Length: 522
Image (cartoon, rainbow, N blue to C red):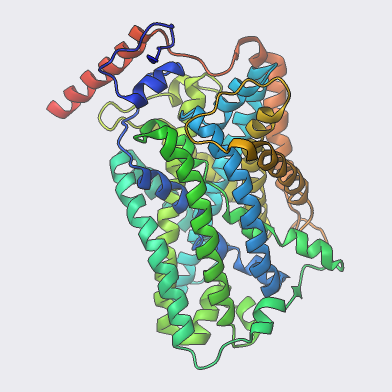
């Protein structure tokens, strides 16, 4: 059977399969398609970044459930995340576009597809900005700890905020150079994460003369939240793992830049989760076995980063600094990849007119074929989300909650729509077969549960400093998107816009190629 273009006419035979598929979905090949399957996987794996999420929230884990919570919670959440990811992967194979989640919702909704698409997109945008903020703020915390150890600079809130701003700026500049550089750095990052975990765990296993007991690692429960219900603390303690297992939708957002997207994008989603599940478990167990000094001394470390104190107590100051550098490099890669995925989501959502100032954000740099302005959108709003950390000690926990809630609501809406009666869905080449319905409903139930869970208080007593402002941020975005929809967007937003007929799509691509050649000439 011959492929067809968006106007129903046969697609030109000189187009590759990826471009023909993209044309059938209504879009021109504007972005440069050069990512391999490994590079697609590497972007998601880098954003999940066990050396970022698991370590930057290690303090949270130590106080909210302790070793037993971190170890067993990681395994449980990892399994449930795999279920959610499988449902997303199946849909990504059928709709390999940069818009990802909100495009899927528009196509899967039986009724009011535009409304479903609108709210999915806004939750995805909230989560993408928050995850970028969480990753780079975590890096800033670790880097400030490094400065404290090497120069004596005090790890104050102001210092962390300045480092955070500089980090975002650098990540924006790196992304400006184009997807080829991002692909190279993401490939390096994937191997750096694997090698980094191996080195950290091996060093902590072989050098210290004493280790914590297996009973301590696998059964020790710690509660410093102020809440008296052990069950409640166990539940809210799952945030450490669930926050880490975010960002794998990046594989979908990089669809239009991935060669062989129908198969390689779903594989990128699933494999990034599975590899992170195994490597993260090894990392958490390895670090926790190294807690041989006083538990409280690690929590009260002058560096502000308990894992660093644990490493220094176990193998000495210089050894601890070396492991810190390994973790920081991984976290830096993670933030860079997060800005990449975030900018592609902004670009795609703007392409369909859903973001205020869409004409500004939907702009392709003719030299690099990347959405330059969307990159800076991601950077600026991520910084804004991190600013409350200057006044609130609970701000970082709230940002991680916002990222987790926003992303997972967006993750699961397409899967829910896929399961509703009357949905017409044609499987892509990668699909779950007869397991699709079971996996879909389990994932839906899990996301509904954690959406409520991570809006609950994390520390008691509740005051200005300990308040979890995640519900406020979610309600602000929901209210903004809802009011904007009711007052204006419902009249003009019809969901993802196709860019024209087959000939019009080819004309867009031809103009971009001409502009690129002209830029290279000069």
